Length: 101
Image (cartoon, rainbow, N blue to C red):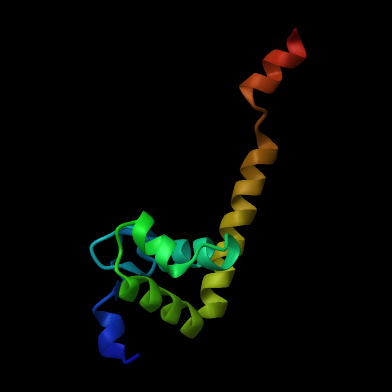
């Protein structure tokens, strides 16, 4: 896949999706595609159908990922750590209510 082909599918716009690489015309980031495909096991066809993308969009996102793997994996881990920190710092209202009864 040439750079020109990637440029037809992937863009980075400061201020949009936190400046992360994303599918042109969508707020779906390469990172989203990677999580759905690599970590959740969704097929390229499933992702394309579910999010109204072309197969080329999804394949371009995965190609971009493999070219920038360390950077994107680091971003995924940072996001996961942030979510974990938030979850540890807050108690669910349902849990609080159940404990008070």
